[in-house]
Image (cartoon, rainbow, N blue to C red; front, side, top):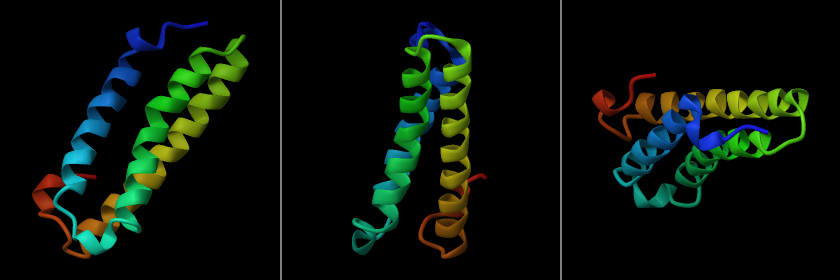
Length: 96
């Protein structure tokens, strides 16, 4: 097992989640149950899967959950590109 709180990529994913929550506050209210909800689920999934994998019994399971976290990061990247291209947020806030 790994101490996930000491993992740099877990720490950075927590910082990313905090930044994304701030960005979501700038999105239109009509997206509250659409893109905002999906973006928040994606960004929370990243550190959550890192932590879950760290608590598993072997490295193979840990790597599996890192793969899921990585996939969530690609999902998030797609959603951020979409809100940037739709002009829903200042493009300077979203650098993908």
